Length: 264
Length: 324
Image 1: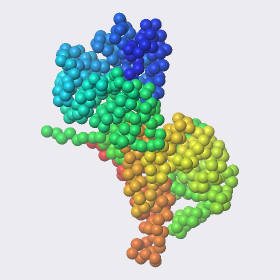
Image 2: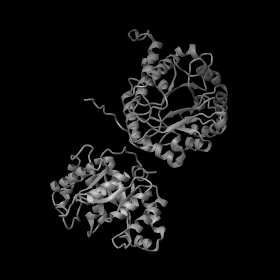
Image 3: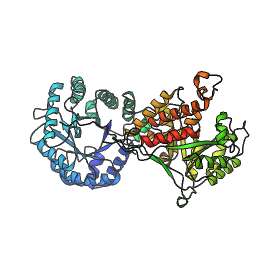
């Protein structure tokens, strides 16, 4: 499973402070730490409170790339910030994210095509997040069809079925699992899938346990990637073990270390 | 409408290992040999690159071996002289590499000292100009003592040395690390141990990752060849799908295995229905080796000059481009 390391995000105090002071140290430390622990992409988010999102995004991309060669996942609702970030990415990046809404899809898929970027598509629209799997799959199909119109292959798309906290919307869990399975039937090649893993445990006790349990269940249903805390050793170990059980990696005694070091 | 032929696309490829070193590179070989580098399953030239043809080494010992009497006519005059034996294999029989097995170091078979072993290796290096493979006697306590002196004496020659096993990989790996040689990582027909051993060697020194040649242990025809085949198939598929800890070229002792089974050794008098013994042995060795070519072997170690001839022809045929 592809891990998109979530930690370079202005939502976290240390990153917000670093952004304010333009101090690259904390950002670069998290870049290195996440890479070391097996992240495959680094999510870059300037946070909700940034007053100059375009400049902040450019700075975060620059300083992160000084510390890590991992591809980046540019995370913002401000598409200008993403576009400026894409221009300075040293290798093809991922755009996080676009809902199944016009004209947002047009804007995002156009810049994805121009910069050869992958795109996270959210299974939601103006009406919000659907409750059942069928509606989610319908929105996923809209994302696939629109991307196709811009010449973007379905396997450049990561569909996020959108998971809600399990203490708020418990009935969404099985629907998300079914969505993950059915997304794979939309097209050939099939779109990929992703989730914002820690959403499932917002406001709960023992968040890590809920996160990693959700991760392995979702993997068994076809999940390809997750935006997650690469610093969570137990999560990374559970993912490594799930890959063995699903016959995605050949077993060896050091299977957890091998999973973490697969980038190197 | 034209039919679009589906071709498998692989994410990764097998690493390359260079054996031997020329004068310019600090050794004394006339040329080097590169193995590995495949980006498709064996000989599927239409799906990827097979940049280096599989190569064939011949096996010699440092003491007179108790091999089937049919070998007498080929090697009888050189059994007691490893240097002359090696030269004969290269000059007369077309060996592309020499593998010397230092059986004489075995405490029960002469107990040659580490210094004697190193001297023997030196003599063989002087006698031939092809890259050399050096294997211990098989008793790990003794082998642990001979690796370092040999590696030192042959520093610069870029040997392939073995064997490293899961329970005992450090002595030979250290010797190779210190003198820039390559190591054979041997696992007992077990993909999980194969991978784990490669990881452990790489942990000793990341630079060794590109100096490992996998010996998955090959069985002779009729003695579990299908087990070896399936392990090699999994390793190669793993390598092509991006598993770096399986992305190494492979070596197999086809001669050693084929000539220790009864089908190669029982005389025609004992089994009249089985046909002439030597021809049978040659076929047993060649058929065993052919199966391993199809399983992805990069370096075959053989014994009988006639079997070697058959296999070299077979490799020529298999390397003909079949891409479309």
